[in-house]
Length: 179
Image 1: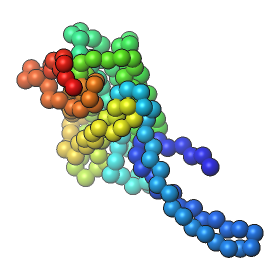
Image 2: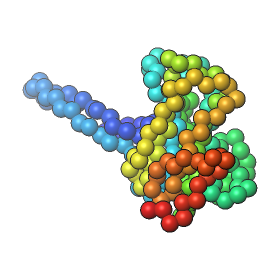
Image 3: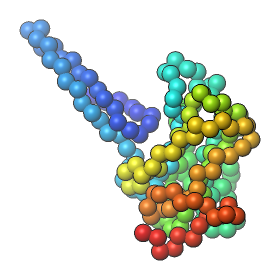
Image 4: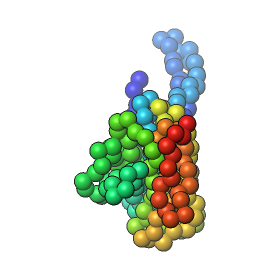
């Protein structure tokens, strides 16, 4: 049996098997789906909606990341050229995945740009951070947002997968020597 998942996480599968004599057996399995175990990955997706909801009506959002070096281009689906470490893709209408390619040091500013208004009670944008296949954090934005604004999460440290606050001036903190 093979199935494709769109979001990393845990999935419960229920099996029902009937043999030639008509005997029935049931079993349940828990499957944990995660990214490859080779580096830093950030995933943006919607939660808090019904499967019958039309994802095309959700607010338009964009995952952004900026590197630790000054004057480095932003990584997003919309920007070109992209930094060499930026491997970003969209899966369906509700999921964006950013893989940080290559050996990395430092911290990377992470944000979500809202093109449209988000109202309280609607679908919730969540960012999940994975390091070497293990989920390190999940942060969800339940706040109302105006279109044209950005939800700034902080700076993800490449070696730990942990978000650190930005400096008071909005720049990425120096994490040289961070464990």
